[in-house]
Length: 400
Image (tube, rainbow, N blue to C red; front, side):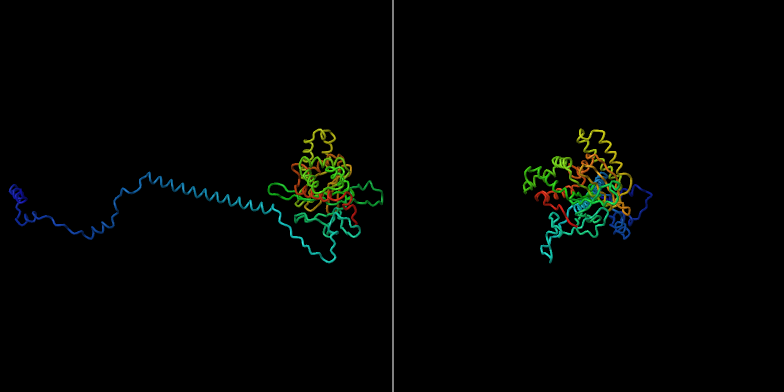
């Protein structure tokens, strides 16, 4: 049935509908497509697109945030590690720069007019031709040209020769002039503490010039009983024994307990300190020897001697540059002197028990942990210069 027939039937069924034929023809036409208006085009352009299925879901958002946080933490850890590495590297550079010894300036071989090599050898006796300056305790080293560099600017030099007299004034006759004993430098070094190598004081060991031959003889006999000097191989053997903790202690124990060699330690602080710190260090050194040898140091007299050592170093400050002398006489008695500045050298006291001075000397000369490894090495090097020469030929007399 066609569209015209259906329309005509509907018109007959509607009696009240009076529609002219022209309008029916309009109804029979197909609706024409209207062109899109400007308003509709503008809305189509400006309207937001509908949600797309390509947008990330909530789980994907969560994973993206976790990945971003993980990446941020990674760069944060990387920055921390870089900072730690930088600080560690700078500390290592500083430690190496302060601990490595710089090479010494090369020695010029050209001799100047009037140059005499004998005057520059401290072990050669040249009689009245040598005008060595002997420094006394408390004297300034400004005019003393016969010195040894210490390696620190605070206490730049130590005298090669010094005069020292430990006789009490009350024991001398009225008007009697004391003749001081001359001591020759054996070796020196700087006492350092902590891993930062903080300098505390410079210490040097001196031996009485008149007792050098006895020290030579004792050291040589430890290697070869019939020799008067040591050759290269024997010198190396002696040096190894002196540097060994146990063998070195045995050698120095023998020298200190069986000979009458007079020695002293000259100590000059490079920073302000006090007697309390020095007293505690020396008491620890003495008690350490007592624990290693309880039979030898276990009597009551040793306890009294330790008390005398404590009393000798009372309270008071020790300014930098002021020298402290620990002297050991031929019988092993210990005496301490201190440069009090304008008041002059002051005697702090004495301890007659030779075990006290021997324990203090071993604190610098032998053992696994000496007060200054540089000082021990320098002292051993000085001994090597002694034993390579025949007994009695080392400077026994130096004329001022």
